[in-house]
Structure formats: C-alpha cells, structure tokens
Amino acid sequence: MKRWLVLDLDDTLFLEQDFVRSGFESIEKYVSGNWNVNGFGIRCWEQFEKGFRNNIFNLVASEFSIEMSNSSLAELVKVYREHEPSIKVDSDVLDSLTELSETFSLALLTGGATAVQESKVRALKIGSFFEHIVYAGAWGDEFDKPNIKGWSRVEELVAKSGKELTYVGDNPEKDWPACKQLKWNFVRIRQPGSLHFSEATPEEIVEVSRFSELISLLRTDH
Image (cartoon, rainbow, N blue to C red; front, side):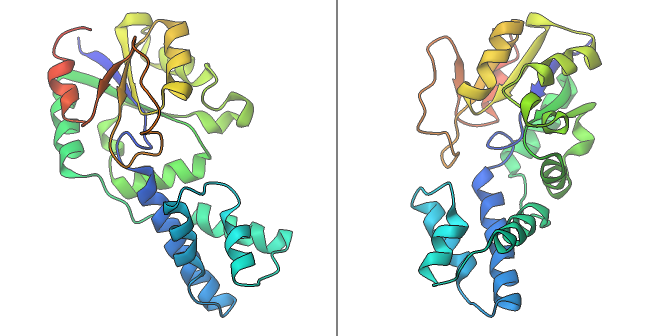
C-alpha cells in the first residue's frame, strides 16, 4: 500500500510571485481599458518587487493621483482574484510529481480563497496527480490555514494519521504547527524566489531547496 504525501500549493509547486505578476498584468489591462490609465499594473508589480505586500493598489493609485474609492478598490481586488492566471509548473516539479505518484498516494492541501486556489490548480494542470484536494479556505477565514481543520480533513479522507502522513510546505509558521500537533512528518521546501524564503527553518524541520530533492529524501522514512 502506498504511503500518503500531502503537498502545499503556493511556493511549493510553483512560485506565488508568478501568480502575483499574472494578476497585475490583468490589472494593467483592466485599468488601461476602463480607467484610461496606462502603467498602473506595471507599477504594482514594481512595488511588489520592492517588498510592498499590503495596500499596493492604494499606494499606486496615490502615485497616479487617482482617488481610490471603496468600490474602485473592490473592482481591482475582484479583477485580481478572478483572473485566469498565466502560471505553469516547471519541469523539475512536473517530473518529480510523476515519479512521486508512482511511490506515494498524493493529496493537496492549500489555504486561501477557494476560487483563487482552484484557478491556480486549473492553470497548472496538476489536478490529476491528486486523489484528494482540500481547500482550507472553503470553511471561511476562521478555519483556513494554519487552523488544524484542513489537516484533520485530510486524515478523514485518507484514513491515516500521524507519522503515516508527510506534509510538504514552504511556510513553517503556517504549516508546521498543525503537523506538529497531529504528529505528521513535515518537510519544508525553501526555494529562491518564494515569499517566505528569508524566514529561517527551525532546527527540528527537514529542509530541501528543490522539489526533486524530495524523491531521494522520501525513499526512506525520516
């Protein structure tokens, strides 16, 4: 019987910054076509690259001398969240998923707005690798990651628990506490370009820097 490997999505199977860039490209088209303002989405991406993470739309609107009403802000958020993302899985991840699926039963556990996460899975074309996909955001913010509910739901679906399960994620602060509480194995993938790359990996956590490293690591229990 195959062991279960449970994977995170953002900054694990692809770089989240690629989704952000895709979203700002959609914002650029929307603002140019509807507000007759060019460069808005481009500037959003530039600010993101500088490290800004909150209130980017308001920040850029002030640079363009645009008065950002609540309804205008809601429009931009809607465009960003509902756009069909231009993202893809790189060959390292795709080849590794193919090889891992020969040894493991795979599940996906991801947090965030469900519709957004579903659009990422569609764009990446990875749904067929997973026997179960759990969108923790479906239960509302209170039960989204890092709440333990998502991990518990996986246990229910696969009828396994504790060390029978391994979770692979990028963010120790969000992914590790539930794994520790439920006694799952946990592997942190820390890829250059990931949003939490600068955060240190606790000593008790195994770390890899490329998805393909999981294959040799998981050939033996850890």
